[in-house]
Every structure is written in structure tokens, then in C-alpha cells.
Length: 337
View 1 (cartoon, rainbow, N blue to C red):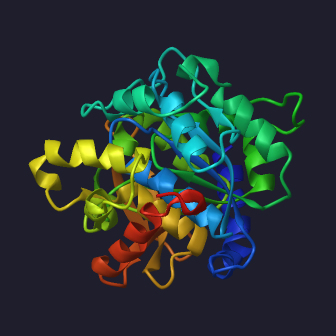
View 2: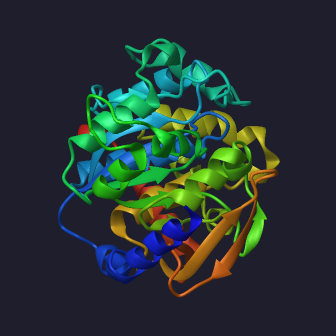
């Protein structure tokens, strides 16, 4: 089996990966996106959802769903609030159902405020469909090689998706379905060239499996990139923006951490930005392979000109990327103030 897997990777390297850089160039067609988020433990996920909706309103992205890798009871209501605020109340939402799936709340308790203040129809994460069923349903209905999946949380769902059997939506198993329908995976995960990063180690078994066996190109936005991009302070200080769940999440959370005095590090927003607009002109790419330890989630990087993975390498100054992300996070739907 290992021999067959290596042959499969080699064939992809000469075909699909050979066109990856070209596919990353900016296109006029909206990019079909599924956002997979752990929204809750950190609030940069809120910024990532806002960036996705802003890019959709600009005609650059076509959101297919926001799927949670975190089964905390307030995750789906929070996503529903943000989707509703941006005029997409019917955007599908899914969440993991397994008993051992991650369950993490927000220490700053901003989700509790949002659900008490803003309209939403989903009252608990238990109410939404299973993440894997929703993935399979959505992917089966899309054109071949069309979907970009952006994961800014745990690999819990994606590892299970690869293992999923044929069902009423597709006769293909999960890995074959992903290979047929997905163009690329963009993941806020890992530290480069090596390190131990939250999104990877929370479900390290899923991370090891998901990244090793994922059958399309994978582009990583590492911890070291988002760490330098500080956003949110401009949003919270803009008095013209009122009754915004995005602003409220940042307004509540920024003062609670002395490290966030100038704003929050923008790991997740960066991943969404490059998934839609491409890595250029913000970054260059280093090609190779990320290897994850299932034991502790520690990742290492191996440079490889035929590798299946790419990680972002800083090109523009972080302040330039900050301006872009701040602007997108401050986007108001329908001219709302």
C-alpha cells in the first residue's frame, strides 16, 4: 500500500502539482470555498469569517458552507449569527458529532454576548448536520477540481472525510471524492521550518493522517506569518460601525490580553485571504512536505521539489498585509453602519 501511495504522489507531482502555481493566480471567477473553523478558542476565526463574506460581497469568493471542527454548543449559533449579519443566513453549517471531537469554548466569553445580542435561528451546535455528511453532499454537487477548502482549525473533519465510505451523495469513498472535486486545501497550521502549533496538536492524530493522505495540493499559512500581522484595532475604534458582531468579538477580547493591546494576531484571516486572492503578491511559496507527529503534534518541514505541500514565505512587509485584512474585516454588508 505504501508503494502505491508513493506512486500516486509521484504521478500527481507531474500533473496536478505542475499546474498549482498557475491555478494560484488571481482569477475573475468567484472561488468556491468551504471554510472549516474551530471558531471559539480564539477570535481571529471571527475575522476569518468576516474576510470570507467581504470577499464574497466583492464577487471574489463563493462560500459553499462554514463547517466547524469544534462541537462546542455555541459554535454553530456563532457562525449562524455571522452568516446572518452578512446576509447569508441560509449558508450551510455543519459540525462534528463524534463523542471525542474537540469541544472548546472561548475564554473571553464573546460567543455568549453575541448569542444574547444578535439574531440567529440555530440555538445549539447539536442542531446542525454532521460535518462529514455535509462535506460529501456539497462536494458531490460541485464541478471537478473546483472547490478550495480552507481549514483554520483542527483536522478532525478532514481526516474523517478521507475515511468516509460511499453514500447516497457519491459512490466514491472520501479520498477519491476529495481528489475529484477539490482543487486545493489551504490550512492555517504548523510552524516553519519546525514547531508545535495549536491547530495541529489539539487533534494530532487527525493532523498526521489528514496531511499525509490528502490527495490535492496543500498550502500552509504558518504560525510565523499570522503572528506578525496585527489587526482589529482599527475596526474597534471606528465609531461609524455599530451593532457588528465582528466588532463586538474584537472589542470584548482585545482588552483581556495585554499581548493584544495593538490588535490580534491574524493567523486565520491570512489563510482565507490567500485562499481567495492567491499567495501573490503577499508571499512566495516553499515546496516540500510537512510531517506531523501523531503523538504530540510537532511538525517538521522537508524541502522537496516534487513534494505535495507548499508553505507561505513572507514577501511583502506584514504591515501591507495588515492593511488589506483590516479593510476586509471592516466591510459592512449592504452599506450597513
